[in-house]
Length: 115
Length: 113
Image (cartoon, rainbow over all chains, first blue to last red; front, side, top):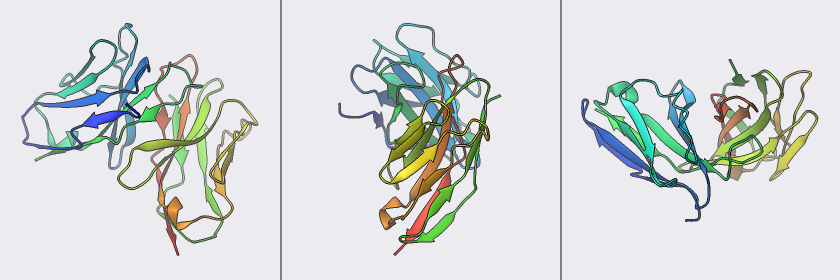
């Protein structure tokens, strides 16, 4: 596609439910990132995938959060047993390759509301 | 650890006013520096970047110069427009570290006609 696509754009769920957020990166981009944007916390890194390498999970806030990237393309971020503090906008980005010289292109995000 | 500090908003200006949004960073080595912009209802877009000291990034009338001596990357525009109303994020990428971008908390700019 022309840009990074995320779905759904909005998700409302009840506390304790599991949710899955999807990201379609730009075709040909080998690097994929998930960030979280919440009030008062700004933008926080969650996880990074590069090709077939083991992902960098250093930003995941708890073991309720997990992500996978199938076939080096689409990625799914899963949050189990959601809590109200998980409410935020979840942003996905992709880049042609890793490194500061490579621009990260962001999707419009998924707004998650946990009631 | 690495961090980015930018001036807190919100910032409200009249059209054609001069804009400065301050950004300073803490990082080891020589990070790449970025300004991203988020227009209402849209995702983050790269506005400009600089990858080494004294580099000036520029785009759409915005400029920022990588100042290693003051660890700063202040965003400036000589004459803002209503269409510049958005949230602006300063960010860094440290070579040799994690591939993540480290962001400031964002500065909301509103430009009134």
